[in-house]
Length: 252
Ligand code: LP5
Ligand code: MN
Image 1 (cartoon, rainbow, N blue to C red):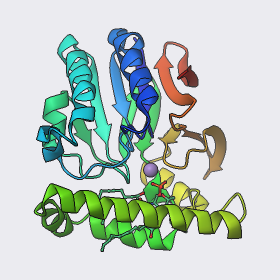
Image 2: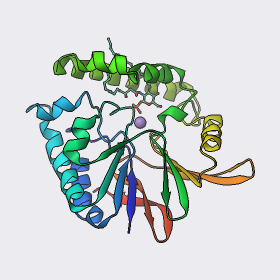
Image 3: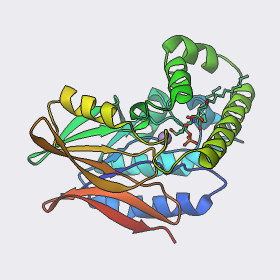
Image 4: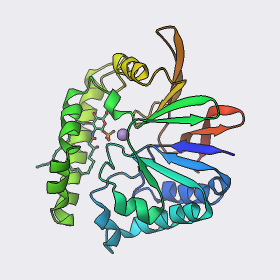
């Protein structure tokens, strides 16, 4: 049986073709799968599960939740790990969609292969401004205060955060090298691999730099496998009897 691992779809009303391609993929390829793991940034922005009941802002998510629920009802196991865009996805979304929330990181064993799953943002430790933002918004206190605000205010804050982040990235694109602070930090990767007793694979998304990287650490060989985002094509991971591979899905 096949297990799929995906991340960084960034689903939103502005890119309906990606949502349509994802729904089609769920209803075809994934119906025969054992499990689907979503490693965060599934949606462009998530400001609270109550958006699902909002006729104006929640409508775009209804077919997505229904399609996930249908798969779960058919027996496909669905798992979700938070990304930096959708860390506010909670039990409301999870129950409606029939998926189980996972902590970041989570160790998964498929066959003989030990795979450490992560969104990947926590590994970008050189991005100090982002890590400060991340530690603030991941506290229960911040989340309770944020979720207590009206939906319209939360959407406005999220839009401000998006704009600031976009400006921040544009500034870095002009001033830094390709291997810049927005990629994972090598020492953070090694520390995580040690902490989890040298899994065969560290599999993450977030950086939108799909690829496979061989690492030697303390006499062990590990691989860092990076998923891609969903724009013209999607780079997913697929595990079956042949092992774990990156797999390219065309979205057009
Ligand atoms: O996502 P991506 O790849 O564009 O950039 C990330 C980092 N940026 C973020 C911010 C998100 O993109 C936008 C927020 C999503 C909404 C979440 C729900 C609502 C929360 C509301 C918060 C007030 O994650 C970016 C990294 C990049 O990955 C690569 O790793 O560099 O981080 C930054 O750009 C650092 C900035 O300092 C981001 C901080 C934004 C804070 C803005 C607060 C403004 C709120 C206004 C309050 C008056
Ligand atoms: Mn991300």
